[in-house]
Image (cartoon, rainbow, N blue to C red; front, side, top):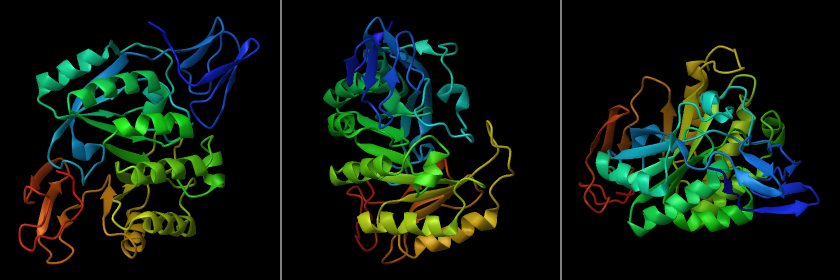
Length: 327
């Protein structure tokens, strides 16, 4: 069932979509760059509304390390994306325009699935959730009424008005900050400023924010650009967790995996300015320690087998320092 989309205006027979900074002009019968918003007889419709793939994951897999650690989260994804990353790990969803393999799901179904799996939160993830805007918004309204958690795992490439309208419904975000220059984002079909605006807006509205940076050889492997990225995050807040992840060949990018020393160097650089730096796609410990007394607050020997040693109020059990972890 196609659902009339939000954030568009008619321009003669064409439609101007205002959901993301692309501002697509969509001709009759065609879709925007995301592949899931179509000009159908003079109205913009969402082609992915209600079509979902569903899984139950550890919240750490999103990754979120400082938000409800050790809990399970219901993960929902669909088709479509508004960036074109040649290294996309979920290209079978992001670049698809088919509902094959997806199940029809309405917002009340999501609430039932939460209850069935005894999960306190939902993550909109796998593909870009902002191009699933109408379903995400309606489902989140229902979830908030039931006091359930709402998480976006997003590229952050969304226009200001849709972002402002969605932010009050979101508890936590992991934003994929793919680089720190327009030249890097131009390779992916976007620009940097809207992503930074999303991160800043979410943080200032008290959404819990964590950032992932996937280091891809030939795309964003400039050390100087990475230093700029870290400085920008630190200026916003030294406490924002940064996940530095290793790339593996996928989709249309055949270069070898990111060298492990390249990840380690970035960990050292980031740790000079940020309090919470973690590595992803590596066999390494990502424990969270108390910055004052060194107590292990969250153990992650295997990242998805977690032991939490925090007090109920989220403080260190030894020295009572607050680490900024949401329980």
